Length: 279
Image (cartoon, rainbow, N blue to C red; front, top):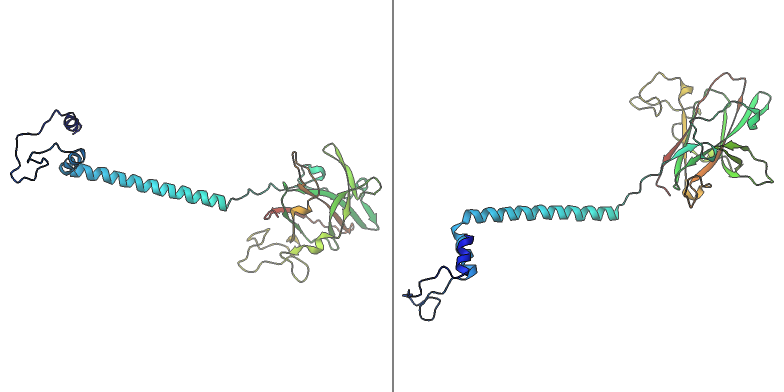
């Protein structure tokens, strides 16, 4: 086909100039046939190669449809990423003072920590913090209820001035800290998750799952942790512990515990931080 078209364009193939058009409908004014134009030649080739033409057009149609779907998906995905861009949640950590790594807080009575004893009642205070990366968070506190008369209080902690007596002080990660409890006992504004009228953790009903023991049912009542929680906004953060932070990224706390030392029982206290909307 290409050689034939090229030959026509170069004039190598000539029409019979002496042939007359009997009906006088030829291209020439005197009934002579003019050389066929490029469009007419393409039409003539397509007419003679209909199957190949349909295959090419079909292939072009498929490519255009796929391209349209791809562009449509890209535009839609781009629109979605612009409108609904999701911020990765902050990495929450419950840490010791000065954001030192810790897995548990020592709750044994120790006068060197400033713990006090009145009769059989011991009182101790311990420091910890929640590092959020600058976002708000939810703090959960859960405890078992084996010790009768166990009192738990939770306070925000602030750095003390030179004239103040700290509630907790010491050295962590090579840095000294000196904190004082401020404001009211935060636990009075925590919301309970599973508290019964008798003050103990509720026993899940039939078919329900316990937040700690799941489907295991043979659990002593006082061994079921009592859960409560409170949300804290990022405006409440009061310390900077992350390198490069320009704003506060941590909230310092003091937990205060007291109980009758003669009670030969053991309780466990859980501190759990969860991400919220970040506000």
